[in-house]
View 1 (cartoon, rainbow, N blue to C red):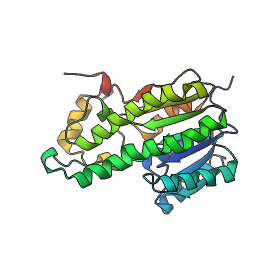
View 2: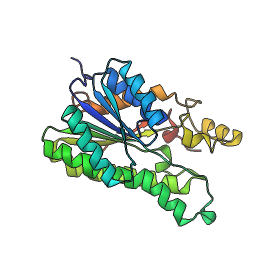
View 3: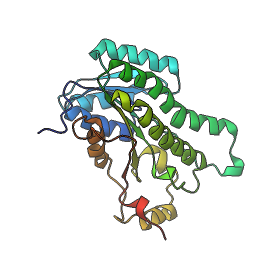
Length: 255
């Protein structure tokens, strides 16, 4: 039994040129998927494509703004022209800010919400509808955060946006289940990604580690197993609406 074989599947990774998105893209490729890397930074996308191709997989970069429905519709048509199908959608673009609540402008609120929540909704509408209509099932994997529930201090808008991702994930899991399209989310703990480095002072680092039973940050590679598991319609065929924590125990701790 090869529960994790993704041969013949096409995975579309929105924000696949990010630190964590790129690492998970490599894993999906290593298990046989054709991997579409979607992002705005062409140089970073090309770097990820090369790493995925080094696993022996087919991979191609596609340029898009995750908050643009027109861009995402174009990418869907381009991916279909490339492989003829979409089986896995992973939503992992992210934007963060430590702006204090009373200093928060609605421009910044909208910007973060657009990337972290609106982008997920748009991708699920566009790619999710194709999966439902395709009639062969599929897997949507949203990337949430430990700040989604309960919210972390100092990142008000980010926490609210990721709580929204959790709700969207559960709602769509129910909506898409009759078409065998599973919708789940990964809740990463603290990994060395660009958006959380900005808020990690020595004091905050100590606080995070004290609250993490494994007493360390995660290595990006430690997200690969969760990504492959949720992408596989063999390994996780009866898993939908799940928020899968990969956080070193962070979510299990209280004072």
